[in-house]
Amino acid sequence: MTTAMQVKLETTAAAEHWGKNALLSFAESEARIHATDATGGLLVAVQRAARRLDGMGITDITLAGDNWDLESRWAFWAGYYNPNRKSTLDWGLAEGAEREELEARKAAGLWVREITNGSPENIFPRALAESAADMLQKLAPDAVSYRIVDGDALLDEGFMGIYNVGRGSERGGAMLQLDYNPTGKSDAAVDICLVGKGITFDSGGYSIKPSAGMAHMKSDMGGAAMVSGGLALAIARGLQKRVKLYLCCAENLISGTAFKLGDVITYRNGVTAEILNTDAEGRLVLADGLLEASDQNPQYILDAATLTGAAKMAVGRDYNSVLSLEDAMADKVLSAAKAENEKAWRLPLEKFHLEQIPSGFAEIANVGMDGTPGASTAAAFLAKFVRDEGRGWVHMDLSGSYLPGANDQWAQGAKGHGFRTIARFLQDS
Image 1 (tube, helix red, strand yellow):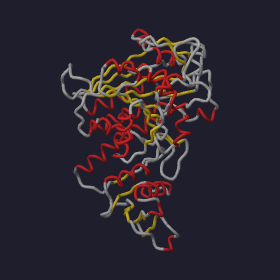
Image 2 (tube, rainbow, N blue to C red):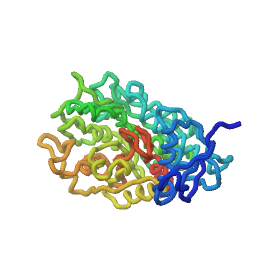
Image 3 (cartoon, rainbow, N blue to C red):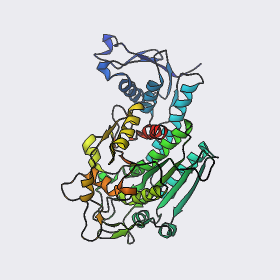
Image 4 (cartoon, rainbow, N blue to C red):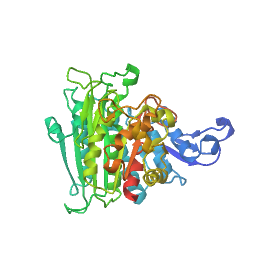
């Protein structure tokens, strides 16, 4: 006999005695979600209800009844997840395509959320690279190969951004270079490159963050997690394109060997960058990944990063931000997000933004001039390291990927909001 609470989904209002616009009603071992316009609409209401049931300490649930579909089941899982509790959710589905899709999303989503929520003592640069590689290779052992570049090898191979940002830590930077090649042909063209920011802890360096701003900086590797999770879901869905993945991983710490304000980094494409703020380090490591991606001459390049506070100021924590110099590239990501019921919003990026990061001692600086838009100038910095200053490239600033505190739809921590968008981008591009 099961002890799981049976949760049913209704599109009618609850009886009046449950309160005005009640989201939930109960009868013995059964709960009913009342998803109406007054309770937020279908998917929002389901996710809110899942959070409330988790908040009641209910750890074993079966989705029951005939009104559940793929997206409402997924919305329930997204809200029911709790990083501090192991709960059991039965989809209420027999074996079949819908269950396979949900399990693929759950596997990718769990990895993204748990690796991002992990302690920075355990999730350090090489550990992040190894975890992503292991997860992806298990999905497609015959199609995935990889190498990790770290230590002095970063200097030998010209990955100057990762090396310099990571040199303040005893655990130096690392780059994962992973090749998903389902064709089996070593000379097959690379269709898409993914690049992820993997700052496993960000103190801000000598431009040190206040304690409150540093408390959740284990999440600064959210871009690396998101592109890895997106590729994982696309592989599980049967992706038949060759994709190369680059994770740019480092700890941004303070020590006698840490990089400093006034330093100039010379990248292997000859671009020099003056450091005016050591807390603008994500763009420095991503530059290495974008250079490597451009060398592969793929059709498209997508990078993802928890890059700027400016993006969060612009769109809040419900949306991810999308920036590109090409309308078609931005539209691809926005369309992918819409198809996957994730939220994304385009922020401005124009050629003139590339002129708003001047330096008196280098070609560019790692922050823009006073009064310039921070998300746009950060993306402009990245464009300097993409072939033809941005051809076939799109940047996701993951403003909606992490919550410092729980709200009515999400638990505290990583949301995983964005990996489905990346998976769909890989499938449809």
